[in-house]
Length: 384
Image (tube, rainbow, N blue to C red):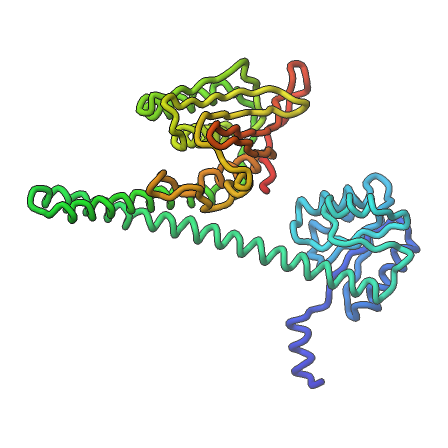
């Protein structure tokens, strides 16, 4: 290898900076020796105290951290969790002499990248484990960065679409007004189709913006379901009057732990669907709720068309439609957004239905704390 090639290798593949955290001096040294054998020229640091190791990570820039499981004051899992909160893509490997499958599962859930029993420590084992952890964490960083870029691009694109859509709608209406008395009937019909298409496209863009924004974790707090449903009733009042429909709430409505704005949007969407996909002479939607264990179970029941059993899962998929646009207007994303909003609040949503009788949508959300119980802190929900 030439001197120039060696310089390029050093530039693009700099020596690794590694940290070994173990309260046993002998085990620390053994791991350090194995790491230096696995990665020549690696800069291997040692730390005996887990709390000091956290400060060391704050001050340094490590390519990988190797932790012991059994340590005083802070075990390896707790330290891994604290490091993961600060360094989302830091490769973390857990070493232990008391490993089992339950520990491995807990470690991986707690932020550990990989796991290595002390009995299997060797240069080859460290080389495979560290390389794999660095690769996986690096790919996770790239994916997250690309996801963020795509979200920003989608949001900007949707925003930019709004202006030409408004222009199409406006000029279509102006043309229609100017030629109303002179144009053949089919021209007016075509202009009507054009205006309807622009309105559908505008709604679709709005839905796509909402879908993108739902990738951000919502603020979670306690709120009263009764007041949320009154907001739904107020928003749908014109539509209820137009359809001569009933929107009924049954029984006492509990407190819920979630995002009130999102819950209002979800229930409003379900109620509107129950009235839209409905051929009954007296369309009706009933909403009830009860507490079960630590959850609030909300039911939105309608007397609409109903859904065939084979489609009960499909209806939550993007752009899935059971009816053509000429039969029932819609974007095909309403239930997708509803599911995404509920999952963002650590909840669940599913449907039971009987064709010709109606559907019942079930929403499960965390219940608010009982009276006298310790207050729960407001927190962002984990996105799914």
